[in-house]
Length: 226
Image 1 (cartoon, rainbow, N blue to C red):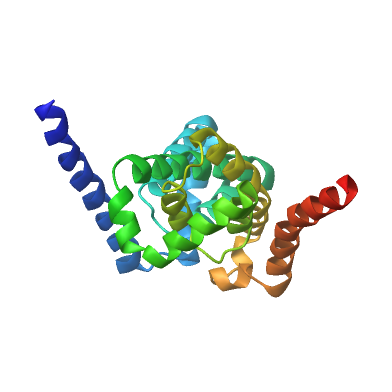
Image 2 (image 1 turned 90 degrees about the vertical axis):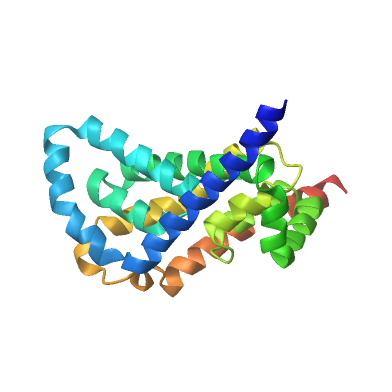
């Protein structure tokens, strides 16, 4: 029993160290669209030789970065679209985001619960109230509207009673529309200078409409049952 308790803090500090290192590298190098463009040529050469190997490698890297809370979801989806096309790219990116997000959700629940709540007390209280009031519809809204960062939703959802399986399914389904739009933008990578070029008013309007639709359906069902 002592060994088990002793190993938990070690695992905790290893995870925290990995998150800090990855986040520090992202901010230090200011990773952006230009870095995706630099990587594109060698990755396309690799795809021509071993497309399945590249797809597996992309998925593994995406899962790892999402697990470690690296704020790179949009860039990874754009890269997937540029490499694999909008459909295959969106599918790969959605699995990478969903699996990595669920792993982050899990270690937030089992290893970092108290620390996450201490780091983000206001956001944690907001998500607690939203999930208690609206359940998975609240999670769908958070996923579709880029108001709360992807990695933070994963961590905060881990503090709620939401089941892991439900979290994964809802994340996969609700992220797919936005990821498809990002992946589709990746097919026009040469015309994109920064992420702001993707997040146009029309793009955000589509995401807002998608976020509103489940609430309209819920309202319609409640009216019908009356």
